[in-house]
Length: 392
Image (cartoon, rainbow, N blue to C red; front, top):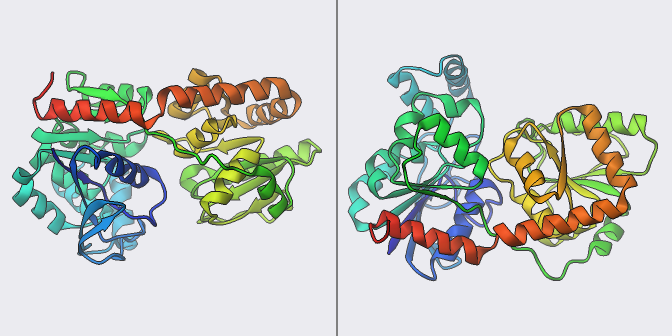
């Protein structure tokens, strides 16, 4: 089949979220299909400024067709539009159009290409519901589209404008059971063909946690991996951890990996490493007591699954159904919904070494059972056959 994947950003420099997921799916599909990615020229997602050259290139064997962002997001225009949309989920079509054009990346040439060339592709795989490419393209290609919304409970999901987007798709792929339940309840798409398949988790076989500890002079530490920003609730993590250290006298550190876009407290027990290599990342995860993710809004979390694949338990925000679900289904982590539960998680981790080790084993078994590429791609190809009317 000729398969096109649509995502707002794509490239080796784009390291997380739905963009990395899209690249992984594309690179696994090329063994069975002719694959092309349709995307913007943007690297960053704040203004969507052009970074890559427009046109066709090849990345890891995948053909990538890029279209320029014709207009960057302007904060002084977008912010009041966004605030108005959050006040009125039933905004008019005109308001919604203005908002999604500013949300971006504003690539009308991408949409026009899809409209004009849709008959050249057997299947379109559209990843992530939120941005301009999905909103503008799905109405044209819905009859041959597999939609991977990567949805989670957030205000945007309740905007009236997304009803048309979700009702356009011929089939859905959900990353988790929790996402499936959420989307089907919100949009009444229970009868649309779907499957739950997540992502495959690949971790290196040669990991040296002692090299990481020696390099950064660490012993016992809690690890956060990802964008350090308000959306991930990082300021609250800092607040909780500093309160924990005030109340508990031990040598536990909080280590951060990732780009910081919020202020990090200056404290000897909080160590920010910035952007690190994959070698340092996996060595660091393996050496951690636990990986912590304070985010309230996650559709899957690859960093959590990478930690679990390495038999490292996780501590997550229990407000997020997806993260809580990972812990409950695996018995490979703990979750909290306030400071005192956060404190209890950390102290259990430090005082129940045998149980904590068993939770790590449970976590590894969970990933091995549900998040392996051979299982996922078999399901993915089945969904392609359904969309192409080869199977029911």
